[in-house]
Length: 46
Image 1 (spheres, rainbow, N blue to C red):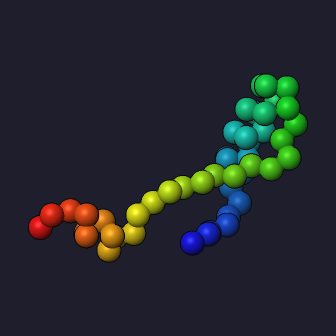
Image 2: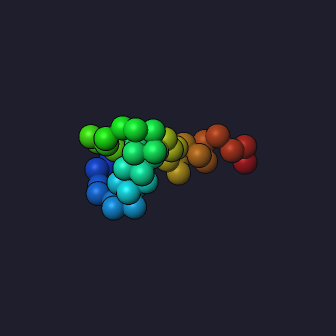
Image 3: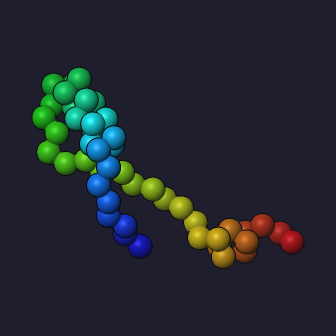
């Protein structure tokens, strides 16, 4: 599943980090890897 959203805080952090290293930010992405509630329950022994 992919959920796209805009967040000024993430963009500011990306811009600041890029500039610190001498780069100009072109794009910034936040990737979250997660496990759904049903799968979480399947992993935990009852």
